[in-house]
Image (cartoon, rainbow, N blue to C red; front, side, top):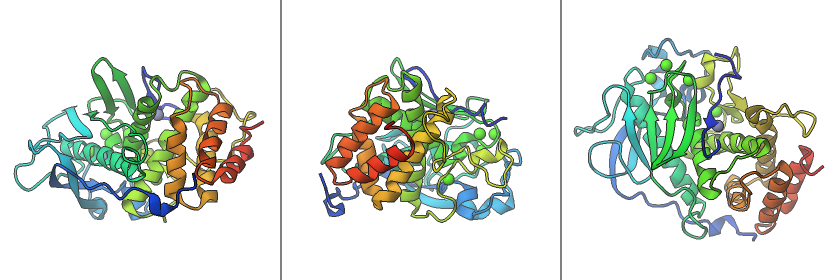
Length: 341
Ligand SMILES: [Ca+2]
Ligand SMILES: [Ca+2]
Ligand SMILES: [Ca+2]
Ligand SMILES: [Ca+2]
Ligand SMILES: [Zn+2]
C-alpha cells in the first residue's frame, strides 16, 4: 500500500479577544454511559514505539499496554453503540453489545473498531462543544454521525453525505483504519466542514483545505483528549501508517511541513493540503493557546465558500482571528506559507 494510495477522501459532498476564561465549560456528557476499551489515540503514539506493526490484526503482547479503559458517553441506553453524536450503523461480524460489563474488546475482535469509532467521534464533538460551539457560538456538526466499520476491504476511509446517509466508512486494509483515532477524527473533519459549508471542497484548493483541516483536527482533538503531546505531535496516523510507510517514523502525513505556495503545488488534495495544515499548525504555535487557535480555525470556516481558494480562506481566517485578538499570528503563518502572495 503506497502512501499516495492512502486517500482518506471525502466523497460526494467533497471530500474578539476572548480570554480563555470565557470558554464554555466542558460540556457535561448526557445520556447513558458505559465502560469501553480503546486505543488512546493509537499504540505507536501512546507507547512511543514506532517499531510496532500490524501482525495481521493479532492481539500480541506488546500492545497490551496500549489499551485504555474509558467511559463511553452520550449513549442511548439500548446496549448498542448508538448515541447522540455517533451510531455504528453497520459492521462486519458481530455488533458490539453491552451485556452488563460495557464494551470491552481487543483489536482482533471486530467490535473493538466499532467502539473506537463511537468513542472518538463522540470525543471530537464534545471537544468542539468545549470551545463554545453550540453554546456561545453556533453549533458545529452537532448531529448523529453514522459509522460503517471494517466493511471496506481497501486501506482507505471516506466521508459521504448521500441521501439520508451521513456516513463515515472506515476501511480495514493494513492496520484497521478505526484502530487509529487520528484516521477517525480526520474523516470527522470532512463531516465538520460539510456541516459548516454544505458541499465544501468543490475545487482543488478547497479540497486541499479539507484534507488539511482533517489532519489538523485529528492532531488537536487527540492531543486535547489524551493530554499528551510528547510523541511527535505533528505526525498524523502514526499507527495506521505502519502498514504503508517505511519508517522509522510512520506518518500518513505531517502538519508541520515546509512546502510553500505556489511552487510546491502538485494538484493533489492530500499533498497540497500539507501547506494549509502547516499554516494552521504554525498559527497554533504562534498563538500559544491551542484552544483559542482551534476556535478561530473552526469559526473561520463558516465564512468559507465551497470552492474557496487558499488566499480567500486565509483572509477569512485572518478576519476571524482579528476578532479574537490574534490576527498577527495568523497573518504571519499564512504569509510564511505563501498564501498571501
Ligand atoms: Ca482490528
Ligand atoms: Ca486489517
Ligand atoms: Ca489501514
Ligand atoms: Ca499522531
Ligand atoms: Zn480526507
